[in-house]
Length: 303
Length: 231
Image (tube, rainbow over all chains, first blue to last red; front, side, top):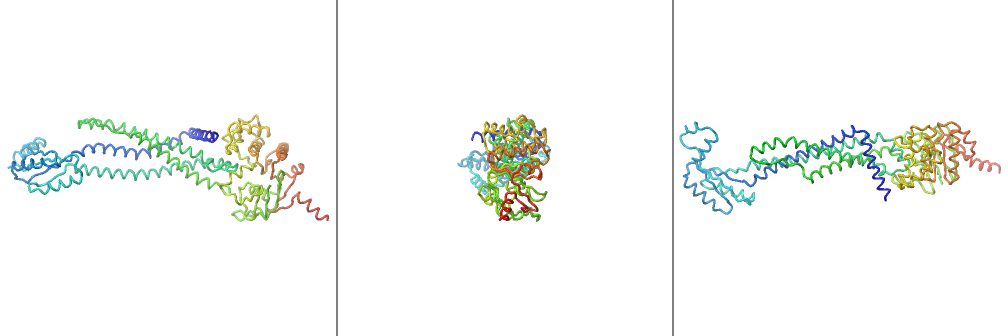
């Protein structure tokens, strides 16, 4: 048993030595693996960050309730008080038509144009904030109820665009899985092909091994370890590439966050995700070399 | 030890290399196989090493039919047979020691025993001082001896050698043949293909001649046949 492990260890080291013997070729293979792994990983990190940002916005599911034009301010205030007393509503803020126009004039810079208006075209508006624990379904019901009020003209859910954005994100997420799958398949081909060339170069060696009674696992072992090293190297290099990408983005992201008065920072992959990236690299390396050796040993087979 | 029962071997191209061969080689025998090139010498050896399979008939080795040996069982079967090749078939990226130790490494021997065995084998072929060299630095005769050391290091019951003296001068050839005679003395069964008839005859072992895949004559049965005619 000791000899068995010693032998494994020897092959492990020897296969690493073989890679070092042709550093450029080995590096190119590892680089291809790294880029293939880094692309879906980078997309995943982007989506993760985007979800993190928009996740904070989810709480702010305010409804803007635009009331019928011409509705008196008293009635609007009464409605506001009525709604505020509901159990599923946390707060209601009345923005009356006059102050709305004032805010609009201030923010838009259309002062002169607004001065020329005959009257105030804006309606009174209620900003309704439901309680935070409200479910999506309940929130939808509330929205319908608000829409059905005789005083209501239009109900607008301020978070609609967030929902859409999250819809897009989940689409992107699905796309990453698909792209990742395709890239993984490509990776399998790349590693398989590299090992295939390696086998062609060592054809004589395999033939001699078969002649003097080496079993298939014995012959396969060095090639599997080569695949293992490719996988580990590719996974680590992919993490390095990812770190470089995040490093390049973190400056602008910090500035942007600063503009919004936020100290939000880009998140990199966590430990579990790093392990996953290396794990995927290793399993692709191993399976790629397994397929290549199985195919080629049968071809060389001397029977 | 080795028994051919009406064995034929036809290659995919249609070439009939061995035709209806009946032959018994006993344990501990040293048998030379002669014949022109293309007579089937190599095929006969390849059949014993299960590098080829008979297309007809049956081959028994050690009283066991080789027909039942599957692809999975092949490595274990080959570990009991030492093979010497005309082109040596050495691994040029490894030292002499590593080449010779390969059969033991494959069989899973531990490090210390491997060292002892390999040095004993190298001592027998007189190459003990070259163990750290690579095969390409050796002469053809030395490379052949490395191949022989590799074939005998795991102490197989059978050794087959295809033209082991093919490229060697007469003196070296004789040395290698004497080496094979020594293995025979310790009970190894040897089947050696060679076209060097004068050398073989000078040694006086059993000789089988093949012609177009069939047995032309066998010095062992020749005396039997003569005896029959004498009756």
